[in-house]
Image (cartoon, rainbow, N blue to C red):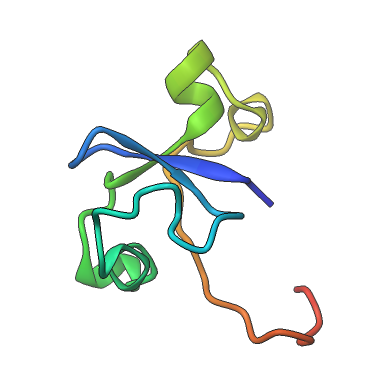
Amino acid sequence: MANGVFHTGYQIIIKLAEADLGNPGRPGLLEEITQPINKRDRHLLHCLEHHKHGVCQAEEHDRSPWMAIRRRTVGAPHS
């Protein structure tokens, strides 16, 4: 699981381990980024490693650097 993603619209880093996502001035950010991809811009969230270094682990395995965030219930098994 990624610890952060880059929001291409706001040009900000989203820190997924922080309650305010590292952006206290953006209420509603969690709801925005957890929308299904068919309800938001597919290229909204970018792998943070790709943003910083030009390549990410996913790309090394022929996958896309574009990210999706899913909410998970605390205590639910990982899939």
